[in-house]
Amino acid sequence: MTGLLVGIGLLAALFLYRRFVRRLSNFTMIISLTICTLIIVFALFPNTLNDLLITYSLKPENGQRLIGLLMLSNLLIFLFLFILAARHDALQQTVDRLVTAITKQAYQGEHVGAPILVVIPAYDEEENIGLVLDRIPKEVCGKQVEAVVVVDGGTDRTAEVVKARKVGVATHVINRGQAASLRVGYSLAIERGAEIVVTLDADNQHHPEEMARLVKPILDGKADMVNGSRVLGHYEKDSQVRALGVVLFNYLISFMAGTRITDCSNGFRAIRTSCLRELTLVQTQYHATEMLLECLRRGFRFQEVPITISNRTYGVSKKGPSMYYALGFLRTIVVTWLR
Image 1 (cartoon, helix red, strand yellow):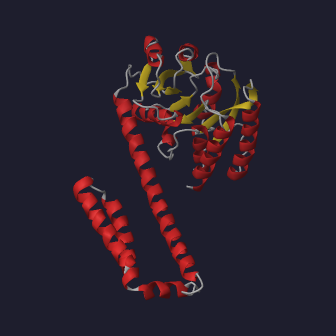
Image 2: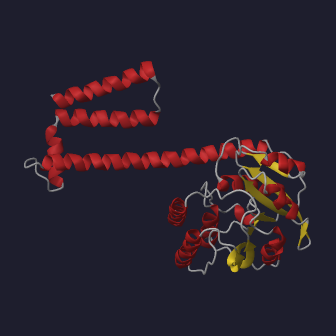
Image 3: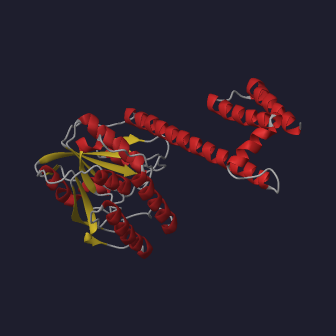
């Protein structure tokens, strides 16, 4: 009788809440109704639960009934968590598309239509972005170069510095992460008909003068994606722990992909624009690893070339603590590889 009263009480509270307090979504109503119905059914027909427990070799006595109830409740919780995770992913992708559309509409700058589009994500890089833009060549391997800076909801004058140099700029209304910023640039490249997209960071660590090394293998028809490698080239270490982490992740990805990778976290790379249409890119951070694994999984021709990385000129890294960065990096590897 107690179970019946509890089930009916919850059912009544559910409808009263929906009617007078707040309208619930159909998904929430279905889940809530299912739980209330199960409580009422098991209260009216307790043997139904006993028959279910016997199926799993659990008898109603000696506390096994309680164990069975716990198993059932855990199964339901797992199911609900799975459904909620799927809905969360769908919602995140919807928000990402919305923010991308708003950002593209707010784009300021001329449409040059160059064959090579350089996409630079920037978050509070007012002191560095001008130095980066001044170093970008006007032409690479006989192809005209155009740059686009995507400001990731920053709070400083990064956008103003970019505009002063008459370079196109799109600004996120909120901070969405470096990878989300790059997706805005990729979308612009596809719409503009660019042949090749080159990405580099806004902190002046990469050397734009080395861009030809990335672009030439694609123009020569030898690669679809070319990744810059500090290991093959030269770099100044800013963190021994992070440097060690890169080495370990290089081994892990090389093993998983069956291809030797020497620098899995480098953001200085070039990719054929037509390939971008085929990639599934959903991460907000750790974009280099996601793109690398996606390209290798789809069989794109891949190369690494030596590049130089210097310590940033101004400011500090925004990657966060090394352990937090490593865990996020590992999660991206696993999620990308399993999907």
